Image (cartoon, rainbow, N blue to C red; front, side):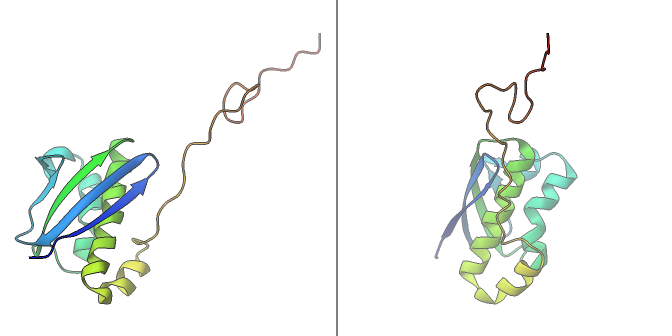
Length: 128
């Protein structure tokens, strides 16, 4: 029984997944994923690569995720699952690539600069 492990990232969230043949159980940080992600849109993000490749009940997935918010975590898991599926079966690459599931979304919060109020917001200018 081979176990495929990959990682996915989004903003400051990092997800490590362990994918193996099974019956479709997904656990996130030791809890069932529907208990961890209560919103339908977050559950959709997690299941998207599995639905795309018609492998919904073929793999057991164990996820360790930390950092970021709940949406960033769901999208990090989505990327990790897509990468693991391609590692197991390279034929899935074209369908997952077409949906944009293999591309890491690199948008992050811009850092605050010194001498400014926020990343780009400056202090108010006073002439007198």
